[in-house]
Length: 382
Ligand SMILES: Cc1cc2nc3c(=O)[nH]c(=O)nc-3n(C[C@H](O)[C@H](O)[C@H](O)COP(=O)(O)O)c2cc1C
Image (cartoon, rainbow, N blue to C red):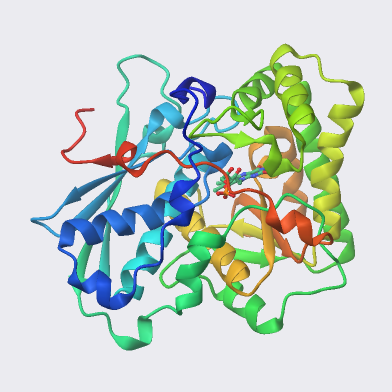
């Protein structure tokens, strides 16, 4: 499945969900459970996801007061996400949005993880391999203890957040209190954020990211997969990443999309692509490495929760952030990264800071498919 294939045609811009007004607590509490659950799924659907694949599906059961999260394996990308790690981390991001939202509205979410083997979240290869994988069920009890209620700014950030792939101002650090909250992570997550503080480690990370990006551009499998998800600005697809999100104008976005597809990028395009991530990392006052004690579906979900929580904290404090999965997913680079001597496996990286050029913080949001496309009203067949 590619982003372009899912475009139903011209007309919709697929940006409407970002305009949803924040429901007041009073209004929310007057709604029936089904409407509350829909709204919480909307918050989850605005989460970041790898290549903007939005691989989550939500099954709402009003009689049980539960929302079950599924991974739709059609959207696990075979070249760049061979283990399903990044897709599962993305579901963890959606889960964190759902948890923050439900607590904000005075509900206590009780999460039960399904027991899922790593092999169950890999890309769907054979036609008969099961499509939907149940990953977690959230039961929503009434009455959240007041000390667990998130600040309104964190919920507002769900609607304003976006990934900002731009250079940041290295002389404008994140406040210490913000860094402390990022490092503390969300309650109950076993994933950790390790800040990169030394100049040498930063340069090494930037170099590895540059290497990972140039591998992506030069590997036919990675490159043609990316072409299906890195889109021209005017395609009006509900999935995928329009070039505008990379700071590309309409002409450049079209050329890069077509060049990736045909393997005919200009040499300088390839260079620019790998330099952008490298420069981004070099310019960022905060760099976080995402790790967990071990590889596994539960740990990847926690990594997603930790990542989404960090991105919302950053947004609510008026800073910007970008995510880089290349170091964790390009096999050779992942191997080289062992030199960093982290305790657990590296699952991803992100950077935060304030954009050097304020206009870069105003780039359009990325599309989201209509909410009804990710809601299930009965358990999926397979
Ligand atoms: C697990 C994960 C991995 C990601 N990896 C990358 C990446 O390697 N490079 C990148 O530019 N963006 C990456 N992103 C950001 C997504 O492309 C972005 O979330 C998606 O396009 C939707 O855009 P939005 O977050 O602005 O709504 C990643 C996001 C997630 C959740």
